[in-house]
Image 1 (cartoon, rainbow over the protein chains, first blue to last red):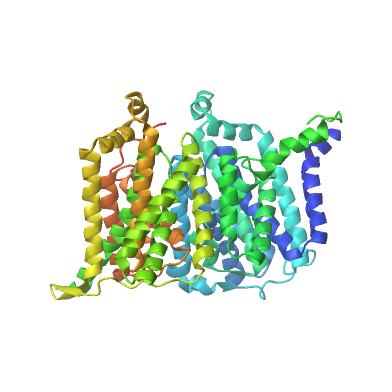
Image 2: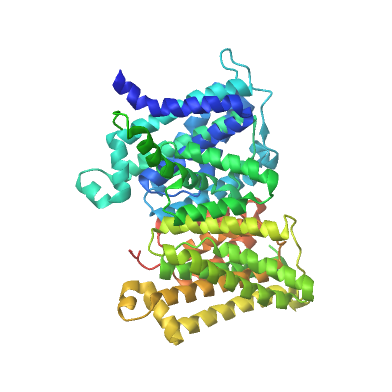
Length: 319
Length: 289
């Protein structure tokens, strides 16, 4: 029992704080933070655990969002089925695309993803305009049927839903970090020759990681779609390609709670700063450069060791 | 397809390609020599365009603006190199990518602060047209193509005929060896970076009168410029020139054939080339560091 509790307490604490935040902060802000941290989780996993930097996360976000949107607009009305559809489409796409992409080196990987994101953008905006309605987007907020227990059409119920989803997701990633597979991922980042020597296939590990990460991103896309009730090509616009990377760096690369801290910091800065000065990019860019020069640990990456030290120096609880 | 449309399409493609070439050559040199991916070249491009706008408003002459833009871009790139890049040359390539993106992002914010969000127009300095095979072509676009070819020749002469250029070329092959010969490679790095920044500024100045100058302009061409560099092969000047013109033609002729495909076709080609030949058209073997 103690063992299970010890494994869970970090996640429980983090989500308890998030629940407290729900009481004090406006609901749209908290929803935005949770969605953004789910979105960033995939990028964080790729960058921190496998060593792939991806400037094309919006592509997978759009794939998930459009998977849901097509279902809800043309076929059915149940948002839960829509979310499942989006995840499925995202998984299939990353399965196919990943097989080609993970063979490339990390710098080419970033640029190929960027290209994919631009392709998806123009595909949705221009080429498939008949189905996607181009820039106008697909609106399906009113056509979503209300479901008995958690009505996803209502923001307050939607909060509970994504709260639970995010908690499950964090538990999953924590489990992944502890598993042999997580160790393999780190090894392929640090020394792929040695891993091959030990009998693992680098390609399979990376492919698997790519699928996991981008299915997570697609999940974020489906949740965005259901939350906003409409999807337009703007979510994969080329000028937004770096959002998840920025948040990942801000929070702390490769840390479990980095995406959450980063999302809070990023969304908070955006909301607060844009009230005072119009150019919050200047500030975020400077923070980014500063973090990179100061040792690329990010906010949570810096805080975590300090917190652990402060918390555990006196008590006998092992880390 | 009718000939007039074809000719004007080709010239349009060549002029777009010239701008992309001027931008991509800096990126390519930086990657070849320093092994950094310098996204902030797009910032110097925007700075070049904005200084062109400001000086045009002040003096009424766009060419003065272009020269001023080049100078400003060179100065800013020198400052950035001294303050940021000197500290991170030794780091991983993804690291430089993120750091330079931070600079680009901050720069876009600074541009919004100084010049505001509204797109600014810059008039074309030469409004004359020439008749070639019965097609009226704007002279300015031909001048842009000429300038980029001159720059190519200049870079070629610099790299092949001067001792500094030869050192840079040797550095692209093997930096440690050059360092071992007693060359101060950090000086070479600075020179290359400032050349790259100045050329980006030139690209911005020349491009400013063909499009509207707005704060996001750097982010908009980002993807295209990278595509040019990737198709040509990172670190190769000849490949960059060839791929810039290919991309320009694909965009311009593609839009004549079927408009929605114009923006997408180059990326599809890039994906294809990367999957067949991961080093690009003229890319040498993958250098390790």
